[in-house]
Length: 362
Ligand code: IPM
Ligand code: MN
Image: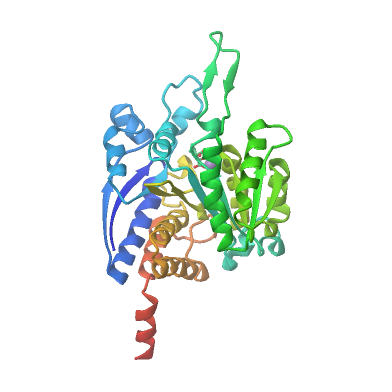
């Protein structure tokens, strides 16, 4: 398969981790005979330093002309504590999601069996966790009208959802539930918010066309608690933009490190793959960031194009690195393996299972 991949490393640890994902994709290319080309472009604070705009026109064009985007991370502390900053690196990512129509953000959460002891949560609780969050990504409070009065004393962010926005992600989530364990939980705040009540009506109606999927509803405050106490009860979680953002960080505690969780953002025409973690500026350039979330995002890219064996080959190589304890300090404080070493180890262990079998036979 030929794939034209836009590479947007972004800020902080973004470049270090995406470099490892690229190594792994190149290993897939070689092992399975594909042809991937990578076109790099600037986004976030890095792009702002060059020309002021966190999403330059050129970057957007490269993304629009690509088959898939591999995104690193975004954010710089320089802008975080400046409430008066007019332009922020994050706007680059938000605009990219909006311009490309990436309305569905898919965030799988599963504890790797080899590192169950890395999570601060009890093993018997997290061993059962295997769920995926379907987060709406281009609507809600993130994109509603924002206001600040002239005196700078009153601010508002509007949360708005249309039936259309809810229904397109709901269909994705129901379809996912059908090939998983047939369960979908809509997480909302329908006891307080009008938008949540619309979500419930629309999702309940759509649920009628998926009779095999058991649908239930949960308030977001309770869901945050259940995610930690009882993650095994979830299969597919469907939720709006802000709730999905918060719940996915909470979910990352299950895996033992936020450096392990990948995501795919999909729309009708485009698809982007990125870790759920941020730019982790404290770790920038130190070669300590965990590249696995980025490498797993590359695996999700393979899965998106129906390349099942390739996906499995990446995941197997990751398992192998964990089994050998070739992991970054977030997973082994005493370990001495850097981001690049872990990435290289995983890339070197990506093999076509068929070749592997025939090699063993000889
Ligand atoms: C995420 C991030 C982004 C978000 C930020 C960087 C704008 O936290 O992808 O979860 O809030 O969506
Ligand atoms: Mn987030």
